[in-house]
Structures are given as structure tokens and as C-alpha cells.
Image (cartoon, rainbow over the protein chains, first blue to last red):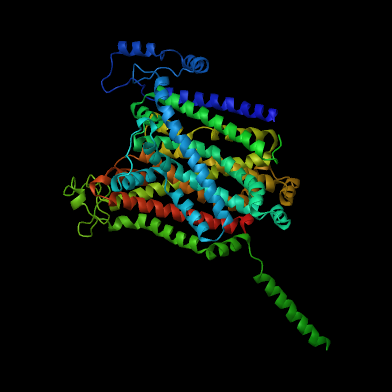
Amino acid sequence: MLNYIIKRIGIAIPTLLILIAVTFYLMHAAPGGPFTSEKPLPPQVLANIEAKYGLDQPIWRQMTTYLWGILTEFDFGPSYKYHSRTVNEIIGQGFPITLKYGFWSFVVAISVGISLGAIAAIRKNTWVDYFAVGVSIGAQVLPNFVMAPLLIIVFTLWLGWLPGGGWHGGDWEYLVMPVIALSTSYMASIARITRSSMLEVLNANYIRTARAKGLPTKTIFFRHVFKPSLLPVISYLGPAFVGLITGSVLIDIFFSTGGMGYFFVNAAFNRDYAVMMGITILVGALTILFSLIVDLLYAWIDPKIRY
Amino acid sequence: MIVANKNKIVKLAENLATEEQTSGRSLWADARTRFIRNKAAITSLVILVLIVLFSFVGPYFAVWTYEQIDWNTMGSAATLGMPSIETGHYFGTDDLGRDLYSRVIQGTQISLMVGIVGATIAVVVGTLYGATSGYIGGRTDQIMMRIVDILMAIPFMFVLILLLVVFGRSIIMLFVGIGLLSWLDMSRIVRGQTLNLKNKEFIEAAQATGVSDYKIIMRHIVPNLLGIVAVYATLLVPGIIIAESFISFLGLGVQEPKTSWGALISEGAGTINYDTEWQLLVPLSFFIVTLFCIYFIGDGLRDALDPKER
């Protein structure tokens, strides 16, 4: 197990370094720097600004400085557009918000998805099953950028039950619609995966044996069916996490929640490379960390995996 | 006696010969029958073909082009821009007074093209990469799969947005980005399948007669992978269309006056407060119907081609 953990971490670190190098290189390969504006600055001023941000140094030098800043002080440098703010401050403002609705979306997607899939599998070919399958297909073709406006139309404009946007420290009524919009398609995928893997397990020989020796259905389900049929779900959690983070871009646009996605898109339109780079790297690091955790979890649960 | 018997035997032999010709169905013929029997898949296929035809034939019936502005309806889309036959705006107009019928057709073309091109990139790159990795095996396989692992851990939507911002918005960049994103899963699936095939007798026979690795991969491995590749390519298309729509939705995809489903849905969602539901509902229904159809076709293909599901 320890060997496996070390091996997985051994992959995670170069991945992160490659990600940083690629984003850094992309930023500096861009035609037109962050300070090119409609009214060209006098060359003297431009040179001064570039010197201030260290842009006059050779690229490898800039990169090592940047990397060193991240590694030692967790410092992503200053923003290129908001002159008085650092990237850290911007991330610090947006990240907790993204984390909060992201976490709840994750919880909802997993709990509702697994229950729906399990019920569908147990009551196969009844109306419950058809309903669950229908919902999961429907939710899959309704991506979050369609869900979000529909939710606003129904709950804010027609019914007037929920506020159409804003955050207000994450009160539940400001949380409901972002979480629904973000979690639905992952809930659907999880339900589908759970259903098919559970059906496979239910048809396995050892379940028949368990039935034959007269175990009660409840015991069979919780002791023999549940765990093995969750394995494919666990391996889906990695991609689902990435999807949730990506989806936050959209949630922030629609519900004005002010999370990281908002700052990312803003930075994209302002060409604020420092902020974009910081967020990309942070999200990348989180993704890598999360897939590491998922892999370890998988190895721990699945007895068939040898390392 | 003997002569009579001989006649009988000859006839029997003829019968056997003809019967042998009619029997023996290929895997693909089998799959086709199974697919045709699947009502949902066939219906979806028909609808999808109709949508594709519509996107090519539709322009001949259009009164307005997709970039032409109808100055009469501009600014009063809610009252004058209603869908109607008389004005020639069959699906109504958008907020700027442009004909939604033509714009939906244009958007359909772009979105379908992105889906197909993206899936093609995934199929070509993913199949070759996965087959090579799986067939060669050993250290090469490990390194190649580690590369896939590394790429998979990168948040591609963010990198794609980064690419589009840094190198300017162009459809080529969009294809490159989506291509980068889509082949990874395919290569893993193909590799797994190749590992299964690798130890079959016919590959061994080819190796024994001295066929080169390249030829074995191209002529013996890849054709045997086509079934599973076809299934996953179909299931990839909706994801790619959604990804493109997402990017266009953010305003980073196709450029005005050209449009795509994502851009149209985004515009329609933005004007929903002004009593112009059709601006959202028309592109949205095209989007949803098409994705549904592709899902069902993919499901049907899987049932038809995947031996495990039989």
C-alpha cells in the first residue's frame, strides 16, 4: 500500500509541474502583453511597469521566481489589472464561496444519485425504474447552462420563491438554485452508473448463494450488494469533481455568487494573466489531489487491486 | 437401386452446398439486425438525419440570411418579431432583429460540425495511441499511459478558456482544444481492448509470418476495435457539443455574426424577461432533441455491438 501511495504521489508532482510550466508558457507566448491597451503607453513607462512585475527578466528566470513564490510562501504574485490586489486576495475571496456550493453539490449529487440508482436497480422494470432512467437521461441532456436559466425562470420569475442571485454569506435560499443547477447532471450520471453496476452485482452467483441460504433481503443488500456496486461510482468521482469545478464558472455568471469562476472569466476578458494562471494552477492542484484521494480510496476498497 | 441412390446423394450434396452459402452471418450483419430491432435507436436515427438534412436544405426556404437585420422588428422583437409565416421569420427574430430560422440553421451546422470533428479527432488519435500503447506493451505502454494520466488530471475547460483568450477566438483553436480534451478516454478504452486482442491466435500467426508491428496494428488490431470505437465515439459527440456550447455560452466560442447552439441559448436566456420565449425555446429544443437522439443511437449501438451486453 505504501509503495502504491508513493508511486501515485510520484505521478502527481510532475503532473502539477507540467501544468504550471504549460500555463506559464502559454501566458508568455500570448501576442500582446497584459499592459497593451488601446492608447499605447510611452516606452519608458511600459519598461518601468514591466520591470516592476519582473517581466523584463528572461522567461526561465520569471518562471523559477514564480514557482519559488508558490512553493515557499503560497504566493501567486500580484494581479496585473487590479493594481492594489494580489492574486492571493482574489482567490481568497472567491474560493470559499466556490468551495461551499461545490461541496453541497457534491453531497447532493452523490446521495441522491446513489439512492436513485439503487432504487431503480432493485425495482427493475417497474415504473420507479423507468422514472429514474428517464430522469437521468433527461438530466444529462440538460447541461447546467440550460438548467440555470430554467431554474431562475421557474423559481424566481414565476413562483417568486427564491432570490434570482447573490450570495449573502451563503444563506440556504441563495444556495438552493446553484446547488441544483450544478449537481443535476452529475447526479444523473451517478444514478446511471449505480443502477448498471448494481444490476450486475444482483445477478452475480454469490448473491444467489446468499439468497439460497436464506439471508434476509436487507442483509444481502447492505452486506453483499452495496459495497461492490459502488466501485464504479468511486472511480467516477474524479471526473465529477473536475466537472463541478468547471461548472462553477457558469454558476457564478448566472447566480452572481461571486466565486472563483467569476474572477476567472473576468480575468479572461481583462487579460489578467496572473489571476488566470493562479486559478488554473490552484484548480489543477485540487484536481490532482482529489484524483489521488479517489485512487487511494479505490485501492483500499477494491480487494482485487494489487499493487 | 444404386443409380437412384446416387441421384439422391447428388441432390443432397447440392442442397448442402446451397444451404451453406445462405448461412453464416458476419458480426456486422448481426449487429445491424439488432440495431434495426431497437425502436428507440431507429427513431432517433431518423430524427437526427432529418435535423441534419434540415440544416442543409433549410437555407433554401429562408427569406432572410443569418446576418441580415430586419430593421422593422429591431427593438420590438416581443411584438413584431413573433414566429410567423408572413414576415418570413418562421422561428421569429432575435433581439437585434435577425432571423432566428436562419440563425438556428447556422448554429446547427456549427454545433454538429464541432461534434463530428471532435469525435473524429478523438477516434483517430485515441485509437492509434491506445492500440500502439497496448500492442507494444512493457515500458512504452507504461510511459504512454502515464502521459494520459497526467493529461487527464489537467482541468481542460480552464486550459481551453486560457487558450482561446491567449491566442484569440477562432474555430480552429476551439477544435484544437476540444481535440486535446476528447481523445484521452478513447485511448484508455482502446488500450484495454487491444490487450485482450494481443494474445489471440491470429495476431500470433501474423507475428510468426514476420508482419511488421505497424502493419499488425493497422491491419489486424484496429479493424477489430471498430465496434467498440464506434460506440464510444457516438457517446462522445454529446459531450463535445455540450463543451462547445459551454464555451460559446461564455462568449468565447464562434464569433458573431456566426453562431452556435450554445450562443443562441445564451442569447435566448438573456432576453427571457422580455416575453420572447421563442428565442430560448427554439434553439433549446433543437439542442435537446439532437442530444437525446445521439444518446439513444449510442445506446442502440452499444446493445448491438458490445458482446457483454447481449
